[in-house]
Structures are given as structure tokens and as C-alpha cells.
Image (cartoon, rainbow, N blue to C red):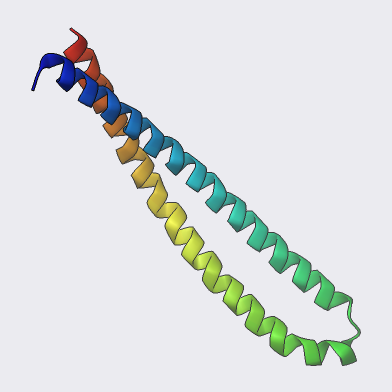
Length: 108
């Protein structure tokens, strides 16, 4: 492989690494947004149920409970993914730095 080809390959690898890191940042933001949305939905649902007269609340409670359990399961999955993305971000940043060093070394 020629020196130019090696530099080009290293440079394009760096670009892909930066893109992956940026994508992970966007993903983390979306996960955070989803957690806020779910929390708001749960709070709104509970507040709405509390406004109902007690005699009308009972028929709604059964489906509300099931829905909140489902939201809780989704929240658990999103939280788990949110924890995982942190390590992926660290790894992606390390790879970007490694690629930057390779590009700098090959440029001389």
C-alpha cells in the first residue's frame, strides 16, 4: 500500500469514527428525551386519575395500572440502554483519538 493510500485510509477511518461518535451523542440525547417523555406521561396520567371522582376512578384504574406497568418496562429498557451508551461513547472517543494520532503520524 502506498503512503498516500495509507494516509487516505487513515483519514477516512477517522471520518467514520467521528461520525459514529456524533451518532452516539445523538442517540444519548434521544434516550434522555424519551426518559423525560415517559416520566411526563406517567405524571400526567396519575394527575388525571386523581382528578376523577372516586366512584369513577375504579373502572379506569385497572387499565391505567396495566399501562403504567408497560411504561415502566419501557423505561427500564431505555435506562439500561442509556447506561450502555456511556461506555460506547467512551470507546468511540478513544477510537477517534487513536485515529487522529494515526492521521497525524502518517502526515509526518
